[in-house]
Amino acid sequence: MDSHRRVDDAFGDFSLESRDDYRAFLTAHGRALAAMEPVARPVRSRLPLLAQDLAALGDAMPEPLPMRQNMNEGARWGLLYTLEGSRLGGAMLSRQVGDGLPRAYLSAVHDKGEWIAFQRALDGAAAEGGEGWLEDAVQGALAAFALFATAAQEQRAVQHG
Image (cartoon, rainbow, N blue to C red; front, top):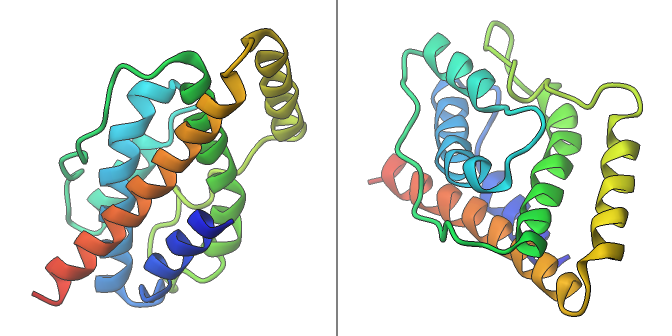
């Protein structure tokens, strides 16, 4: 909860109605997402949608933040949980995006039944994961939240020089 709140607070200063702030918001997300998706291996990548939105704003995908690439399976599921959960939040945030601004990334919601199917797969992985799996998953989720928070804070610092 605290990690989630820190991420919400870190991104809360970005106005999604402002073209410049929205571009900064997407850039920060791009730095975190580009680091996590290759490790988490989601079923549906949102990187192309994020790249599409940034291109529509005149920017390219940013360099990913550094991230440990050798995570075990439990940690990978923790990353996935955070990435899939962020799609739920994205659906709400997409309503705040200013008129005329691209919103493919934030609008990439789960298809009907997809979130439930993910939760079942997560439960199955946890049941098979053995001792320490849950702690590894929690550490993966915490790493994902930390990456998003770092990306937001660094982007804000760049923006305000």
